[in-house]
Length: 406
Image (cartoon, rainbow, N blue to C red; front, side):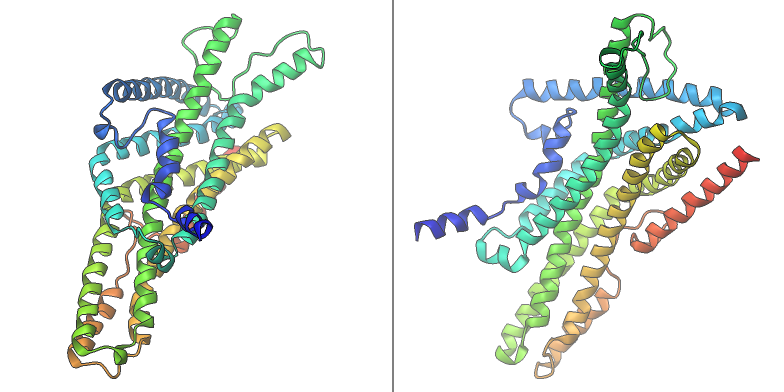
């Protein structure tokens, strides 16, 4: 008996369990969404200082990348070098824009998380009915894969030159230690002659890449977390509504059940609109930047040497997965909220009263406009959006290939 109680307690999830990964990961660059609630002022201001200094360092290196790109893009002989840094610039801009969007919407995002926490099932019975364990496991698998791909990209670009130079110099007998960087960049000083200056600049660039990777990933992780929970609520409503048998209850119980469901449904729809409002512009620029990044990364894959092909293939894969994951969860939100109308029609409503049927009709009518994420100029995010982004990327790619090869 004691063992079963311990097992039951161990399987009980909390709302913090579903948000812990993005929250903890974000703190590694100094971002804490709940910093205003932290009573430890020293820790609070130290984290904020670390975040600001990290982004100042990050954007200083981005300026160097832009300078490199501008100098080389005007010449067809160095177009390949210019396009090599273009994906990194696009990635950096997207990281900056995501962080800016999160900063502007911090209060609304925290309130959204609080509202979702208020709806979160807290007992073993309700968590089983909501399939919390399944949604958490599935979400964690997606977030882990996505995070590994994106951080593998930043790590490979950041550390590959140093690892390569170290192996060649210390193990293969090279006479000089090649002082290269993972990203093409212009420095306002000589960053290669002096070894101390080189390593100082190198680790500054590595930290810049880490800040970009974490800020790029974590906003999407927060989007995944919020959509997963809304999908869980919509699916629960659909499952319980379809299984409900009006013939087994009194008329008052039937009407009360639907009235409570309408309130619950409206609350979930309001929260989905808040998610759309917070993330829609971020996703719009995300897709635009991703189209260019996929284009330039694909161009490098078709025109570079073997070493660069491996690095840019990781970059290419991470960008594709990022767009796919966002579209997948957008499609999940549409599908789960649409199911409520089908569930209402499929239940045993024939023996119920006219009032019950009228309320059921309104639920079906409302479900005809499913919850969705709608970036400006884009249709609701779904798998069709993924194909649209891929199509845009290919058009840019074809234009770039024509320009390069004449």
